[in-house]
Image (cartoon, rainbow, N blue to C red; front, side):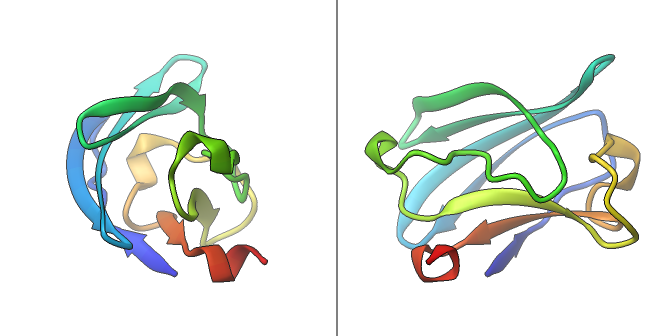
Length: 100
């Protein structure tokens, strides 16, 4: 399990190496919740994913991503909002072995 560092800002884009995979993650707040776009090697994998507490974001191995991502509320079980990113809500990479 690896925590992906996020800032408490309404929109951000970061590149991160996860299990040898070059990943690009965009996290952004809308009025309907926090959303995430995910790409590997600059190729879109999934877009417009609604971020919920403790719910896997990628979910499908056929998309080619090894492992998965999820948000965890460190103070309860609320869905994430940008104001608490990096503190209350942690974005975590889960390796395939964590998911078994």
